[in-house]
Image (cartoon, rainbow, N blue to C red; front, side, top):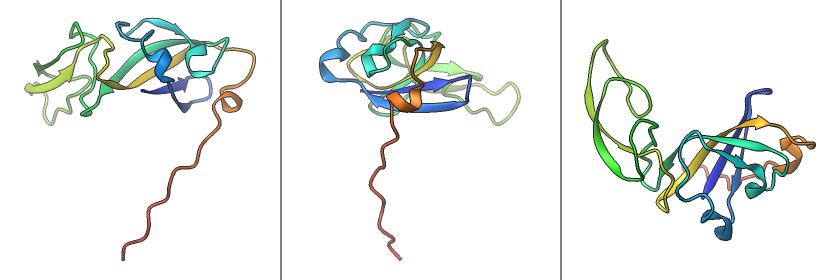
Length: 133
């Protein structure tokens, strides 16, 4: 499970991987719950869950209860890009509870620790794609 930690003070975000043995402690948590940053190696930090997405990319919504995926009639907000004012559309979204199908968790920093996040979560370089011209 991947976790994205956003720091509103400097406007930067950091990615980390939650170890398999600690994923169980996150299952069942709701959007808006405060968690300890030690789960991802940011000890001393307090994080607030703001959302996430599942293995198929469906976003989590705070107003859909439970861990299930469902079709909801949306007029705006997470999971809906409206083209015109007043437009409503049925969209598939994920509930507000973390489950084993959650692949990404979005969080923000509530209280900072002693060390900056840049030191605790160093940037990793990914594989570069080949030029296919």
